[in-house]
Image 1 (cartoon, rainbow, N blue to C red):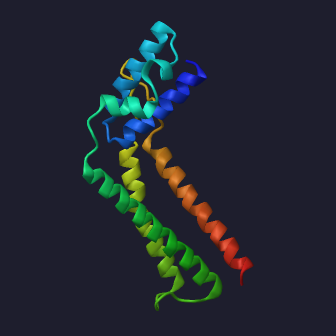
Image 2: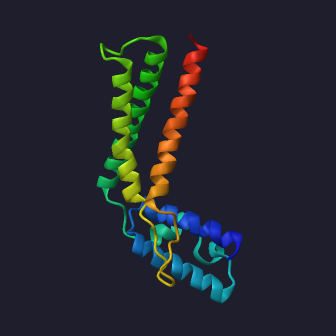
Image 3: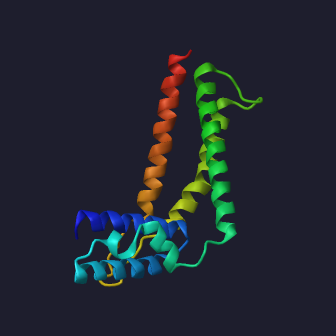
Length: 166
């Protein structure tokens, strides 16, 4: 597998996930692309075009409901980040937010982080390779870990910023 094919595979998996394609179907599509590339030696971009365009050509149009839920997750994540940053600043400065103790605000922010994490874990189910049965993508635990580490790092950065501005 060449670097170009690996990159194309990652782009294709991402494009198919954005179109809400089932993991098993993603595995089939990727296997077809890789088989064609292995047999012909062609570059996948030359044979199939850009990954996003190819994903659109082999799948049904995305339903409107998925965009609504995606936007809701973005808004919920933004509210979560805002609450966590306000909670951190409140803890450092000893200020409540609308009468709520800073620790409670921080806890609410972390609780609101759970739905986006679960949604992304569900959305990023491992893609099986139909030829070998092995995974083409990392599992759900990695998604949860990366998102949680990101939020903890963001919280630590906010804490540092709050300390510097006191």
